[in-house]
Image (cartoon, rainbow, N blue to C red; front, top):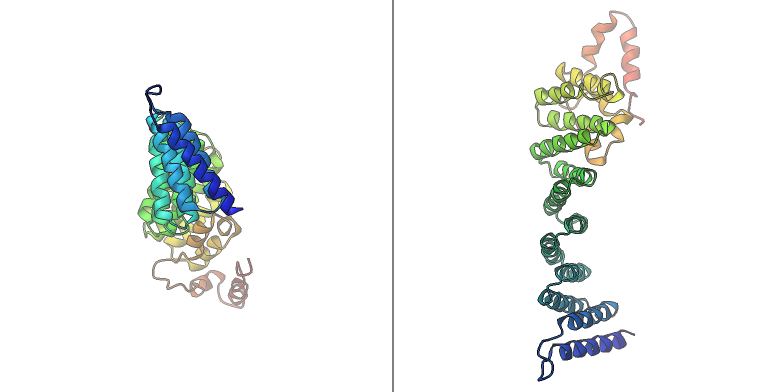
Length: 311
């Protein structure tokens, strides 16, 4: 089967070369037909799992589409060449071809196709290179934003923000999240604004910047429905506990379902948050005076041992 497909591929290449020949009666090469034959050859090579030869055939197809001023089809072929590199586990080369294709889509006036290709490239490279994935998602978001397709743009920004958190590039993550939040506000998706505020608070507290975290909550009071919401109350409680170095209070909020079931990267920020100088231990001694003398504080402490611990 593979040998048959390889033979078919070579037959298509021979036809392509014939299309490119000129004579006394044929003054110009037939670039369109040559590109078509190379496309068929590429598919045959791909089906035979000869990915390097398939890549070469796709690049030839792209070359002749370019000669024929068919930039969109040339870009498609170059993107396919990138996918052949992916099949060979040559991810950096794959991404280079896809990025080149995206530039051609932009030149051709098809930015949406460019953005979708950048998103696909981000998904491909994410398992092996988070930094490059961030770059690709942000570029894709920028293309969609320029086209006023904010819903698509904000989804890609969200991917980039989460990866920045994973990379511990928290300053950049804070900026990216603010942009996300602004976009959600613009499209009037206020519940998502609430979630982004929570993520912002967690990031700023991990950065040790209580003032910035508090500012995010205060600014969100202007969002319809935020004041008094579950998200708002949780963040007010968290900030109070953090400011007063009350480890119990911080622990309870950070281990509540509201935070534990956020996107994984933000949930990890929540469960790893510690109050300044707390050393990661729960602060039970400070809670004792509230109950006065007698047996009540001991009972409260006993309950605290299990609070949030079984979630």
